[in-house]
Image 1 (cartoon, rainbow, N blue to C red):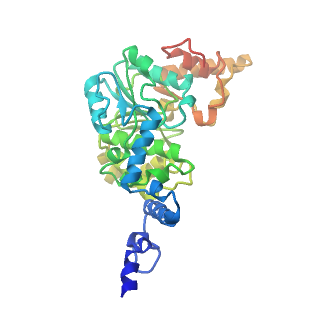
Image 2 (image 1 turned 120 degrees about the vertical axis):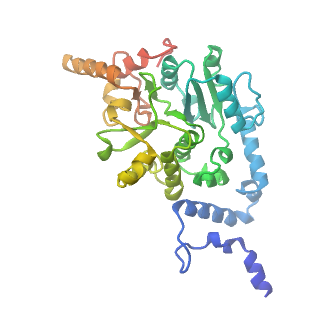
Image 3 (image 1 turned 180 degrees about the horizontal axis):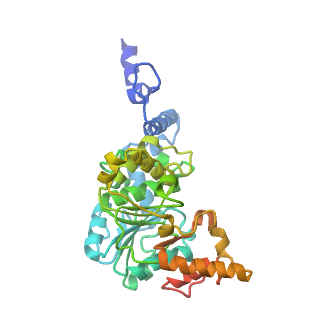
Length: 380
């Protein structure tokens, strides 16, 4: 009897941690399996002297997370910064106050989770191109790695650009992905965390607040005001192509984004690079398009052809970092440049492929980067 009672208190015997393939039990989603693996891993570390520090759901760990933010930014428990806004507000309060304070012409979100030193001039040109088209936009860079005053020079120039540290507990609240806030400490140890974090935060921010999301290596060529519930194909037409999440424009609590958040949770795999991002959106759109009559009108999605957001594909982009070396190539690049600036709305640099490349001054990429800049003397 005593042994039985003790066994019932064994955390490894909790129903949520049992083998989902065992007879009589309901199978778990991939998201459930991820949480299961992480919780079991913590139980196995019980004998370790560091267990209390690493425990996922304890109040001690939540305090450690706050200390981590404090140490990283050197400004205490601060979730965002913008002049005139109380620096001690919580994340959600800061976001609401920033949008109210800024009297925004539009809300734009970016995510940066690489080291601060990696944010270079080409990324700055993306921000400059946005502000050149929309000087009254309110821009939030959601980041765990940038200093809160990282964009102070832009702020001094009158632009409304803020860095905010996402509080996942608040940002993911009332969504299927809220569990990722609980397992944040272990999640951030996974190989592709920076990328997967970016994929989730962009979806959640647009779902919670509505607005436009832009990758930091996207150059804005034309005003974005007309975009509404828009997503772009990376190539070909929407029925036969992959979609990209580098440019997204959606209203608050978009049904499509709700479906994406469900898919992120139910199929999450921390071992796959693109599975939870561009491939996720392609899966959701593919599943919904198979039920077009039932769902498409309800979701109100506008598919943009590749030329709108991604006029040059990731497979071809490296070629255009080099200057033309003959008359035929020069004529080709000149014609393509003219078509892009007249037809396309954005231009994606595909930094995952081109980050080590420096565009030559007379290359197509170099001309685009220098055409829409504000601080044009900064060297690429």
